Image (cartoon, rainbow, N blue to C red; front, side):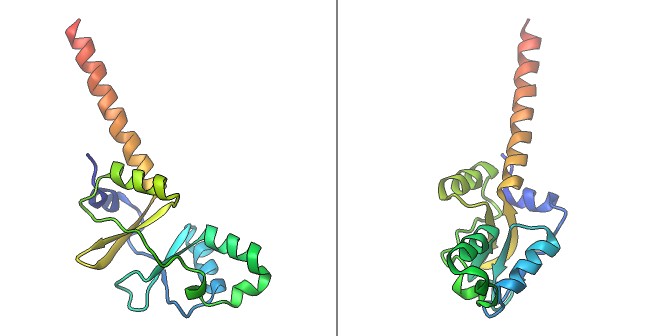
Length: 146
């Protein structure tokens, strides 16, 4: 089984994009666009996740509040109950939690500190690789048994 640690090791971007709770939604949206990502971590100290702000949060906020949302502090819009995973978690367990919780980004925490971020795309990709390997092994076993 592929672990979150292995998923982080294979990601191209090593840094986690963060904003402070005081920054505006406009600041966060600019970072989302600049880095071509779907979520930013909200952190005052750069080590712990106080919240997460996703594209979906911004869109829903715009629909509810209109254009004035862009000057709103991130702390008013972020998701506070952050569900995180750990480096030793499996890709499958993370994928199940994301699917069940209906979210697409998950901070990775080790010893209480943020060490990375994974997306549902990362989890699906490694799960598909696992399934391809399993399939190849089964085909090989069947071919060798004839």
